[in-house]
Length: 588
Image (cartoon, rainbow, N blue to C red; front, top):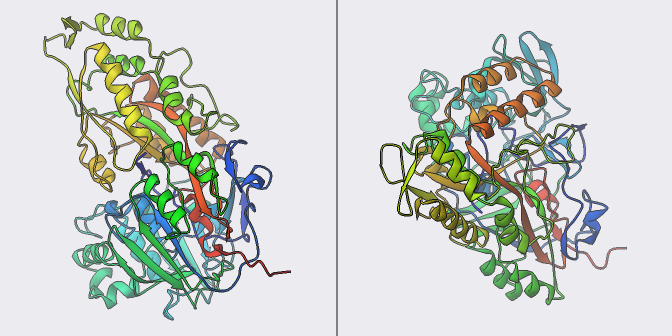
């Protein structure tokens, strides 16, 4: 299943190189499911935050397969905002927090000396306390210039970064950044702007001094130089810096990256490995084959053929687990398409599609307890959960109800072919990733069948591997299937999914007002209420059809310890990559 991260103003969907220190309990989207399929991870049911633990021996070259091609190395622009780019950079990038499997936030104790501190509400002012020994892996401390560089890169302001297409709009809400006492950076946000999840801001991405060393010394005052530095980070591998437990020694775009431990890293995640290699392998089948052959040590594909599970179960030297994770799959309508600009057609299409059957025939073959989503933001065990689908008919597979909707709006049929009220045959292009995927071909065929029965001609147009973000940005689709990757943070959901500039082209004044109010409240309960309202409007307007929290697979060699899945981060298993290692069987 192709996956991507929403464009968070605070980049809050990104995970971090995290530690067990500096924790904060967070009321979240709901916990992971108390169910799994697999062998060797049984303790994850009762001890999800510490399962598959064990003493690590020193040394070893661990090779891990990643399933998504990355289009860029940098993290500041839209081309580097993909989940694949985040994963390939996770061993070294300066992410400052993550969530564990219990929904608790953990701050990166290799960068922060303590949790962020809210100094004032009007205007919102936050102090970020940096460790004095936190560096970029080559002696240069992490500091205020790095905050300012990130501010400019994400400002959405042509006078700050000319022609930039930022991954987030974080910088657009910043008024000033100043040095505080005791190695603290103080960020003052624009007057009137508030965020109920202020404590979870991703405030740095790249080292400002490396931008200068690469030839962009004018980034502070020249918006063209600033933009050039963003492009530079995007196009070139980060071989000259690290703010994580590893340093990259070599890499090829979309192919592999090799890491060694970062000797300057002061965080509590300290690697025992000699090296870590992340390499792209297309498809879970190929990953499982290489795992059985011993050429890789593990993989965590988000899509896989359930027959793999039988093969893994027959291998005593391997262990694996399957459980619902952070991705939620959905089918979206592009409002730029003249057919789909009409709400009755969107509603009829999403009524004709049978979500229960899709989930059972696709995801259910891998995880039989897969449930159809009834809320696009919160899981059933969240205090903020409400049933947003109800008796709307969305996802019901009720063909007669779908035809009735169309007839009421003046649509007709010429034989079996659906025609608009103006007599034009309805045809659509349906896009999703197919390469290396097991679930999406099933879903694609079912959707084409459902809509064919409705009289809609659907042409399948697969998305090439690694190009989902580009396709979304260009709105190069009519209907599209992919997964958003979620964490327990939700305050910016209405903005990202349905606000100005969203990927579907949907615009609604009431949603815009909700987005505006969300930017003026620190009340998390109110933020949840508002986001639920925006989600309900989007469903009432048939913007998307939610399907399921998708099951995901982790498979590793039996001697690999401290690898465990994590529904609460976009990074899944990579949230604690610095702790991975090989079991020391001689430890007492």
